Structure formats: structure tokens, C-alpha cells
Length: 205
Length: 205
Image (cartoon, rainbow over all chains, first blue to last red; front, side, top):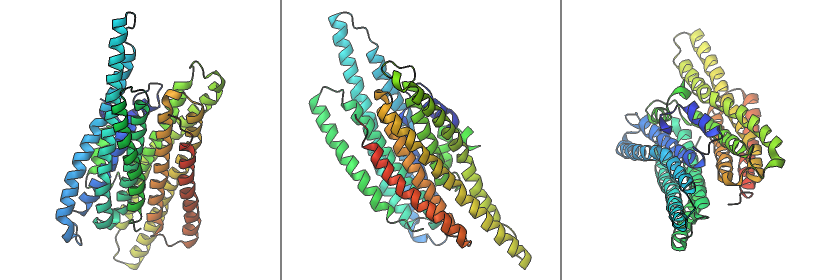
């Protein structure tokens, strides 16, 4: 599993001539780090003098950050596996008409999954905005930059994941699927730009 | 060392109630991943049919990506150590006037280092823009999204590192130092927004 590699090993594996892990897995990792940073600020606020009024809220944020971090961590491997499936489908035999048909179907089905995994990553990373905003505004002031980095990493996780959705959509023939997902992509993209900007205005150094 | 932890372990350590690794180390990691992704696209272009004319350029990009990836990887630990030094200085004894003076000097010196490490991270991450642009425009078309993710991760590495510079500057008394560094920060910030936008317009899916 990619997430059991060392950080150094993961970066080296990204650098290597193998296409996985690539931008999709890096997007999920960025999302996971973003969730972890908002969780850290909540952790640094819980039990802290001067923050008595936000204790319950911080505990909820911590719980939410944990969920998102864990889910996005799993998506690092899920994205690379979805990519491998597409590659495997392309390698299927294509001698007879029947083989050709089976291969085409397998490719289309694998491409859909390879689009849906990063779409899910983008949707989960978007949920980080809400908690990063809260820790920036109400969390431990000494860790406000960590909340801001969380917000920016979430933005880049979303946009990076969406690029990976789009590149797969480009080869998918099912028009209804493509239209539906494209619409979601466009909305997520627009919100990512807008929300990051809005939240960062609340950072007071 | 942080980079010898597993990816999962690093994310968990970020999430924990300990302030390191925090946004500064995550910024360096984002930069290292950005460099690795541009390197990967160069790797996937070298020796590839249809890309004969850019072979020498891709080899240079690969070399550059390797250097930046390695440097930014080291900065993950360097940033956390610089933060620890600030914390250690704050814990110094402050009973006598002499102790107070020595503590004050140690804090100021540690804060300067804690500002200069992420400043270096931002400067190195900025160098990734040039190689990400080249791999997007001239590299393996199948990996164009990886070049784009590299560009966006570089942007977020820069802006995240710069926030960590600014938070430290806020406590530094040496006005000349603060003015000089603030000017660099403002310029780097402006370029990061501008260059990311420009480069991403060149991505053709």
C-alpha cells in the first residue's frame, strides 16, 4: 500500500517513471494533510485556557477532521488502483470482435471508476473548508496559519482531483454520465476558488 | 526524522495535538510532491516516441526536479526543527536580568531562523513553476494533468510557506530584517498567484 511507504519513499515513487502514484493520489494526500491540519488546530484548542466557549465545537471539528483525514488517506491508494484498472483494461486482448467488445466495455467501466474516485476526493476535500474556517476564526490563535494552510491544501486537493476527473471524462462515451459529472465538476471548481478566497480573508496574523 | 515515517504516520502526527509537523512542514512536503510530479512527467517523456525533439530538455528538467524534490524533502524536517528551537528558547530560564536578556536573544535568533527556513521553501517551490510549465507544454500529453497538479501544489507550497514566514516576522524586533523579508514575501506571493494562473491556461485536456 502506498500509504505504508515512508514519506521519502512515496515522493520517490511519485518522481519515478511509473505513472502511479500521480496527480490523483497526490490530490488525495493533499486533502488528507488538509484535514489533519484542521484537526491539529482543534486538538491545540481543546483544553486550552481562553477557549472555554468553543470546546464543544472544537470536539465536533476534531471528529469531522478525523473522518475526512482517514477517508482521504484511503483514497490515495484507491486512486492509483483505479488508474491501474484502466491500464489493465487497455492491455486486454483485441483479436476477435468479441474480445474487442469486451475490452471496450472494460475500458469504459474502468474510466468511469477512475473519474468517480477523484470526484469523491474533491467532494470530501471541499468539506474541509467548513472546518478550516472554524478553526481559523475560533481556534487557537497561535495555530491560525495551520488553519490557513489547511484551507489552501483543501483548495488544491479539490482542483487537482477535478483535473483527474476531467481527463477521464474526455474518453468516456456515455454522454449522460459525462454531462452529469461535468456539471458537478464545474460547480465544485467554482466553489473551490471562491471559498478559499473568502476563508483566507479571515486569517489574522 | 519525519520523512522516514510512513505517509499514514506523517498524516497522523500532523493531526495530533503536537504543533509539529504543522503547516510549515506540510508546505515543504507539498513542494517536494510538486517537484516529484514534474519529474515524473519528464520521466514519462524521456525515450518516448513522438517526443524526440524535447529529449535533452526533458533530461534537464528531470535533473532540476530531482534537486528541488530532494531539497524540499529535507526542508520538511528542517522546518519542524526550526519551530522546536523557538519553543526551546521560550522555555529558557528568566529569573535574573542576565537570563532574561539571554532568553530574549535566543528567541529572536530562533524566530529569524524559523522565518528563513519557510522563505527558502517558498523560493525553491517557485522554481518548480518553470519546470511544470515546460512539462505541461512539451511533455507527454498523457501526463498533462500531473504537470498541472505539480503547478498547483507548487503554488500552495509557496503561499503556505510564506504564511509561516509572516507569522514569525510578526514577533521579530529587528526592523531591517523584517522590512527586507516582508518585501520578498510580498513579491513571492504576487508572483505565485500570477504564475499559477498563467501556466494553467496552457493545460489542454
